[in-house]
Length: 482
Image (cartoon, rainbow, N blue to C red; front, side):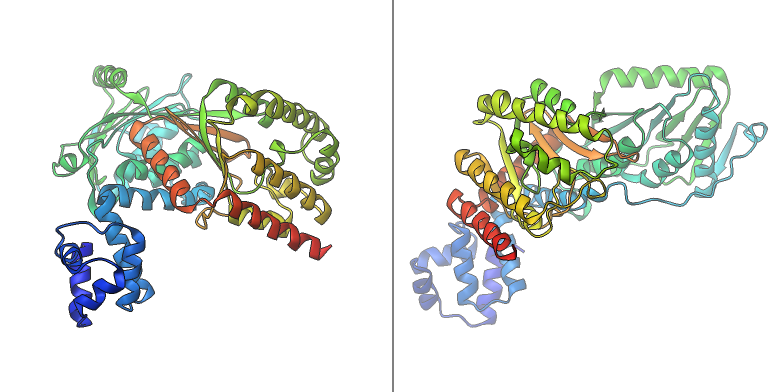
């Protein structure tokens, strides 16, 4: 329901006096009448909140009319896109948590014959089998054309067989800027399904082209999906209910040529770079990209600690931390690079966003987002105090270091996010614990993440004065514990 429809409903339900209502809101009666009739928009969120207060609406009812106001203001597509991206941030740290138990037994090669296969179990059995057989080839390579929206279980099962298989994946995305069923953001749903794949398989390469998803979903294309291996071709339906297997080399090679021709017209969806040396790779990344925004949770010691603070890091890193002393040297080198080279030149365009929840988490526990807790001893109270005092001065000095209220982003998150004008980056641990920089290049997703982050800054970032007060509260809390 629109804002005007909801207001009409509650006004009639509560038999509201319109003259008194308008006086309470500080607007004339005719203006209120036009808002209720949908002939003019409400002027602000504050006005809608006042309406809810006068009508004595419950918390849930107030949320409902505020959402209706926002939909009227920015449109349903942007509203629901922001909601889905918020859910994406909420789940970002759990992208590798979901596994499907696969009990497939691969059949002998001689039993694979050109035939029509019916039933989901049989069709997916062929997919698993072809993937397994391809591992025996001298130069294995799987080509697959299927929508990632439906493929999370299939891909997970492939990775259980082998997470090293070179795989080229071709699919379409939606650029219609229209809502799909259940108000989903189709391209984000595809990204959600593919992130675990690229984090588990560094040889996975996804490519996309555009199509109108609403139109495509209305047509039942005959066997639209394809899996091509060195020796086999398997075409199958969207619902995996039927497929046809081909072994004839002429047919397999013809489909390979067609697939590769399509690939030349497609664009890279995302890439992955493994960061074997976290600080050195970060420095290289900063030097080669124009980063505009970074989202993290806790204060970052890398940005504020100086040479005389290295003893704090040495105490905090556990004894079995890999190449501990080498990391300390890299930490010192990166600190110099950040403070003397990079940030003085880019502080006006490189906006750092951290969270209130992360600040309080560090103050209470001594943990940081930079290093996984398995490798990190929590900072002592004294060291926490040192960090927060330095962080406070850093924030006071730089207007584009901002604290935001983001309760949906886990305070314990070790994933962080960076945005450039052309790409959105997720820096997260892969299935081996190695940091991977996932670069998403598809324009509708980049624009969506930028819009979301800009909206967070606009609606949820604290003023510099309030930010310093909140840091001071955490400093006082630590001082009281000492």
